[in-house]
Length: 499
Image 1 (cartoon, rainbow, N blue to C red):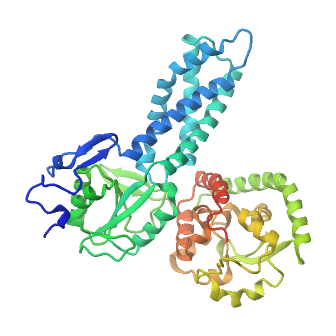
Image 2: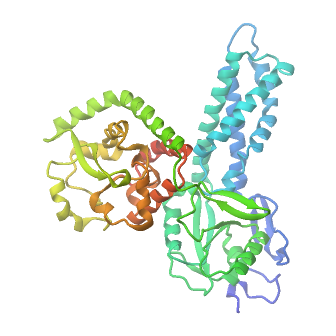
Image 3: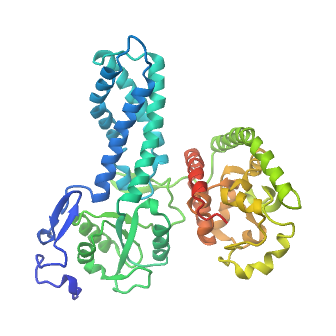
């Protein structure tokens, strides 16, 4: 098998178009790379190197700000010595956060964000504040009283999350993304490439694809056969590979992993069966044999009760908070155009039972009668998605952009017809197109928000939306609901996929 021109050689030390590559801040001479199992890099890649250090700097800054905010100013309090003693405690604070894995998950997971850090930050802060209390009691210049401890804990928790969010946002804009090489080609290759490009927050830059045959029909260039992986990685500075299961047997998978270890590449594997795999999969073992633990297909009674309790409490609080906004929007709709304030539409709910979904009216009165005539202009054949919908009213356009038309659905949640988080409620014509395994999306109550709404709304095709709903149902947890609710506000603010 003849290697490509860029890698033509008679030995492993032949020159390449580029002879130096960076790992962290340390240049590596490619001519010194071997194929005998030696590991090329001893540090993280450029992006990981800086993200880890910026997160640590943000955590240290959060601690100092919290000490400043939580420390009362009194005659017997000397602020400067107090902060200096806190500065000496920073290394201990960083080690604690490191022990909780708060600097390593960004390198391990593509989609890891600040919301995912919340449980670990909470645990680390709880333990850290107790350690600081002991530290100041025996070492510092001022013993912390109970009120100061509570204020310190709340302040450092809030500041840590805010600064981590800022650091990740800045790193996405300032640092180059991970250069990704896809290995193998199946129906998911182009889907993955599109998703990487649609979500810059992932920090992934698809460069090319290598396949067993050396040919590819994807939207990125083919970089040769899998045998040429090493040359493609070196020449294009690849940081991560994403491996498709199609076209490779077990021995080839193992050989691929060995090569990736030699080149210090991060590896992501696509599962063989997407139906069973989701974010809640657990790594287990039976006497050293790795097995994947999947959630049971049904929610326990306690899980259903917790989900309903969250819906009742959340919807009641939201209705109280949003009452003035509801009144203002209702008045604006009546003044802007003729017709009712609310729009009611028949949707399919849990178990296939119909429900009347409530929204603020954003269109003219005859909007439903004009659907068929406008369908030919739709950007998506599966549902009506118009670049500039002529049926929208002036107020309706603003409500859609800010997703404020969805607020009345909180009443559906309080009545038990919907949930705060769940699968997207479909109209009957859309629901009739779904059969087989995808019908299990109806096992949970449809929600105001969910994976589809958070990840892109109308930018996500119908079939992928159904898969996302299926994965949500089969991987449900209470933390998943809380996490999606927290991610909804940033998604709405970005207005990605707003129709």
